[in-house]
Amino acid sequence: MLLVIDCGNTNTVFAVYEDGIEKPMSHWRISTNAERTADEYAICLTQLMTLNKINIYDIKNVIIATVVPATSFNLKKLCHKHFDISPMFIGESSTKLNLEVRINQPAEVGADRLVNAISAHKLYVGPLIIVDFGTATTFDVIDADGGYAGGIICPGINLSLEALYMAAAQLPRVTISPPEGNSKDNNSIRVIGNSTTTAMQSGIFWGYLAMIEGLVSRIRAEYKHPMKVIGTGGLAELFAGWSSAIEIVNSELTLDGLRMIYNYNRAIMEPE
Image 1: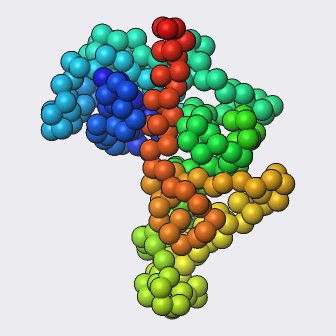
Image 2 (image 1 turned 120 degrees about the vertical axis):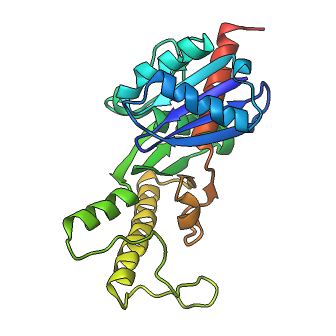
């Protein structure tokens, strides 16, 4: 079995794949903590796998992507100490991506964005725009041949909400949703809030939706070719439901990409 680890700024996702199977047997999400030790990771994983009737000793291979450098040591130690495995690690020269990064400083692109590019091109061809709703909201442009052409980085919606709450003493915390009473089905969509809460919800939700639609439109105009738009990350489904700008939602895009990269490297190391 293959263990895939995707460590983001907010959450770390673990997924287990059986050999030759494209869908994960199970996947789990825990909060990212740079101080979490290898033993703490092992305790979490053992309990989660046991609940899903997966034997931890059946894990024979691991691949890791992290955008939090401080987690690298303990994630690697987890693999060495508790699985007796040397993991593939995105960003190390021994792990090949088969991806051309066409920007001025290729090393600056986050591991998750490169993995998403590989996964999206394999699944949907291209050219593509990938909108990833994470701690940051990113827009990545993938050429027709799969090359990484560049992108846009914006503050994530939860980050914006937290900044608004922290900076303005009289503003409450609000949920990320269309203001109450809005419905796509009965033409009752309202942008003007009639209370502080609905005004904030409207600003966050419709403001973010306008940003997504506006940036997608500008990228397409600049690229000058038809482009599919793929949404991923926790809030992709919510925003895709209210806008035609996002055509496909795939919440497992990064996990799929890590599995693909593992299979590609295994094929290189073990040619038929």
